[in-house]
Image 1: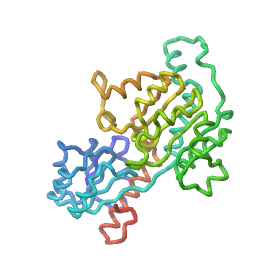
Image 2: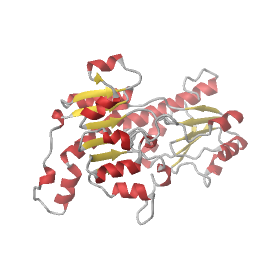
Image 3: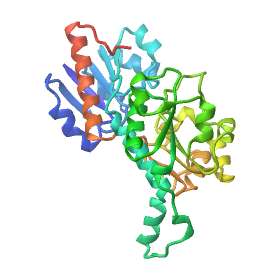
Image 4: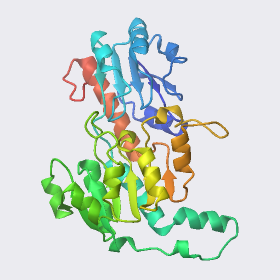
Length: 328
């Protein structure tokens, strides 16, 4: 079986080779799938994608013409794939339903600790040999802070446990309460969570038309002054203009995000000396009160292993005619 995999970073190649227990004939492409490199698919029966690969109707038709039967994405999200077109073309599609929740949880903790203790600010000063301790460096201890966790699936619960380990009180909101989570956190209404939390971390799924721009002016207005907000979930959950207003008024003390709704326009590219979305540019200008990472929440050895192994298993299920539990 010839399998072409897009978006395979250099550090990831050894993982793809080492985990290839089904002995697929692999072609590993570092770039994401786009209109220019889709012709590399010719001669392959299966394609594996990463987030922000362009799998629109046009490219799916090209895949079909090249003889592709199976389309895999090594991600939980699949909004980069036109599922309607894939179904019409009779392509078998599967995703990865989950991977190491610690990868995302640890990033949220990293953001929180950095913003609470002003880590980036202090290191930037000392690298320039400025060792003066100023008032901005004075901080609270995270064990004395209330952490609000929005979404208590595997990732949210893992994040809650990590914060709990630091001594924080954990409040949570979820439409569907998790019985296991109640030994770690206290479920409250969303209004109570934002009113009482010093740090709010988002781990809920994005549901189009239901929670677009969830982090908006109204929600921010109900939060504590100097609140720290962390979004490692989905870019569509955040209203950037509202967040900017919160930063400017000092209502928001710190903001960190690993995601943007339009991230494919600039993430994974060197945009130095190039223009990007002016709202995103303005948000970044609030550094070190604002921390931005390029969608690297799952960029760990454990998470990568999970994504590759499950994707390989999905393809094997399709080939063997078995029921693929992760099919879309």
